[in-house]
Length: 102
Image 1 (tube, one colour):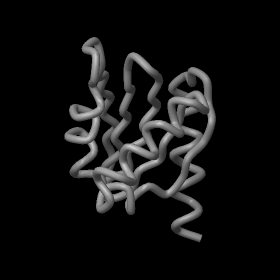
Image 2 (cartoon, rainbow, N blue to C red):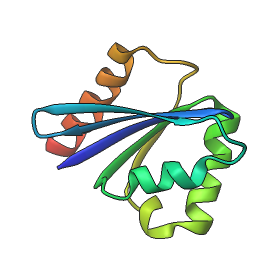
Image 3 (cartoon, rainbow, N blue to C red):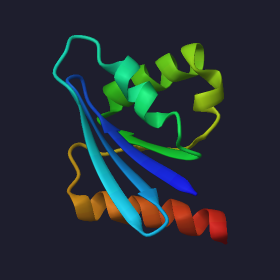
C-alpha cells in the first residue's frame, strides 16, 4: 500500500509517501509550472490525500480531474490546510488510513 499526502500551494508541493514501514518526503517546485512533476511523483500512489490553501487545492483538483482522471480517481480526501508541520501530515495520513481500515 502506498498513501501519499500532498500539500500544494502556488509555488511548491510537499509530498509525503507512506509505504510499509517507511515515510519518504519529496519537495517539488521552483519552476513556473511544476504540476507535471507533481503528477509524475503521484503515479505510483494507490491512495492520495490533497492538502493546501483553498484556492490552490481547487485549481489543482480541477487540473487533475480534467487531465489525469485515473489519477484523480485515487484521491480519497481534500483538506484545506495552510502550511502543516510533519505531525499534522501524519495525523491526516492516520485519519485516512483508519477510515479505510474501519
